[in-house]
Length: 542
Picture 1 (tube, rainbow, N blue to C red):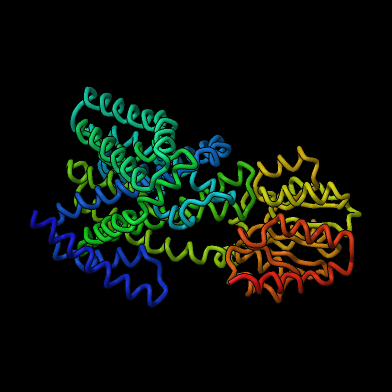
Picture 2: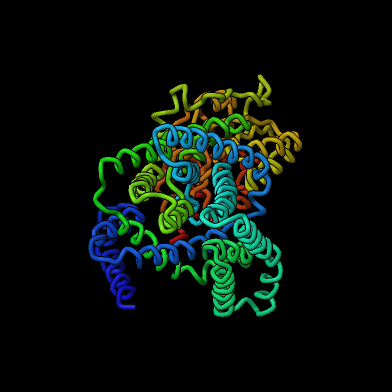
């Protein structure tokens, strides 16, 4: 108990101090926690820290399970299943072959292959702003993370039984699969329970914590990792709309356990030997370079654009938290030597730190790499496009999501010519079915806009509220009016002088824009006054 209290005290004091400095310098949170762990690595008990890391990751995996938008990702799961299994197989075969060839044992080679091929769903949630999955690459990321987590859970259950026998492996697999199945089956039951109890925040919290404790308790009693039980508990509570209520009620605990996990991970580091450094460098290269490029290639083969493929693949350039728990279990069970274990920990820390920064500047990195052949290995420009050669005085809509569909439907209904641009094959298929002119392409590329005849357009409406896409739209050389959709009032005021109209969710939404477009169609003078009307609307907002 003394070791536990001492370790927790050191963890939170170090986390608070380092996080304060990192926030002042505008650096990400996760690197701050990892640095804090490194600073206290010499004063905490390693065994206690390993236990805390498993508890911390169990709760965070529970949050990931709750946050899964299965309905929004189910359409891409079929295509990403092939991508994910192909990527895992390719990376695993390469790493296993190289590890075994240079002298690692079969078991160690298997562990190295697994930790190299799985990315972090927790880092992915941080990167993707709490799990919002409206953009194609985000749905791909979450779908890949889900499949990877299920694969690594099965591998975890198998590897945990290596020193025992087949009589232990089969029961472990059975218990794990049963837990996950119960979690999925209980989704509607628990959502109905929360609804019948009048959706009280306090009751939602109690149901969430009780579900987590029951599932992790069953997992622990059955002799498998509590992380497996936590993931199953998250799935049980992931049915909309009550998943958001559960997330909101346990949100404060998320930060508590995030600090525990990431600081504990940093605290596991020791001064590395030359062997440890060499193994870690190999893992880092595989995780940050080799694996993303294999994923990029596979996503493009499935028909996604260069930009979508890049954003999805390079958002997953870090080691998985499941892989870390697997490594801890393998080290405890004497499956791997301390040199290998420390190399995995070191590679995890470095890739999680670098991923926090590369994700922040992902678009800027893409701008630099986009011109090189290896980013678009299979990408074919405008493989699928339908735009009349003589089209002019038309509306270009950047994005065929719900707002884009609503705008297109209104404009076509008023005899206006429309071209939509999207990089999601599913949305393009829907545009085809709705007989809308379309371009399947990357809006960051000039050629995409040239194909849409942007210089002859009447109005360009950018639905995607991504800074780089907004700026690209503003840079287009055309006399067309430009309408941008942004996230906040502050952003809107920054763009107000640069475009004709700015939309803001919950304030100046698509419905309001449609009213203005109707006015523009009826009267040229209304179009001329639109910017002034927008300024007046903005003055009403705080």
